[in-house]
Length: 301
Image (tube, helix red, strand yellow):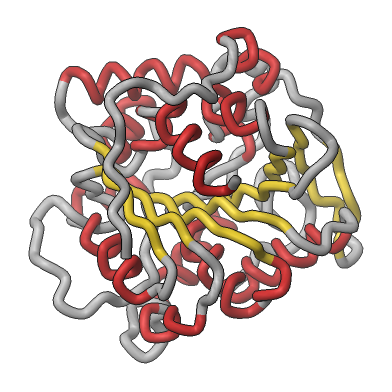
């Protein structure tokens, strides 16, 4: 399991500043999957292997950082979508991580994609692991960011990780900017400012958040994730079967999903690279969009 040491300068693959605005203006399309219209957006060059992004708990297409999308789309065809029954997509919300993975595979099939790369964030990372296990022929390489496989034995106790306060905020009917800053960013001036910058970038999109994830959908999503906390259901013991290279990344102190889970996954995966980002928590990829985006592009080349 190689440990990638991050250079201090930003990567050479940083997109021009205006590109973030272009990402925020990407058109919303629909494709019919199992009879339902699924909303998605596509950015970047039309040629080459697509990079499919799998979203977090309660996440919509509008929560992807335009700055990160711009970096990735400078080199790759990037696809983001809302799962069935989420935000702008029709259908019934999935009731298991396996169903989330099957929907992602069906979405790719509906677009005529036979092979792709994956980037899953938070619960989307867990879905990426499930997709690697259930649909291995579809995936060439995968990035698992700020995520876990379910139950991890020997998890060190940290009172900040997954605390009642964290889940009380995460499951509020409506999350405020302060909620996101609390859940996704470290309580340091630098990390908090990076969080405010991220939230400001999300508002570049004129129609941002016209559709949010409804309560029934995110409750089903939460139940799907919690089911993997049963040791018998955890994906961790199965990760030895994954043959694709996987980049595992997280912030140094993730209070949503224990950073230790990233280490455990990197140990269990036969071909994994582990990256941890300084002064960062769950939202490290939005705190360091150019740096993380560059690391992703280098890994996927």
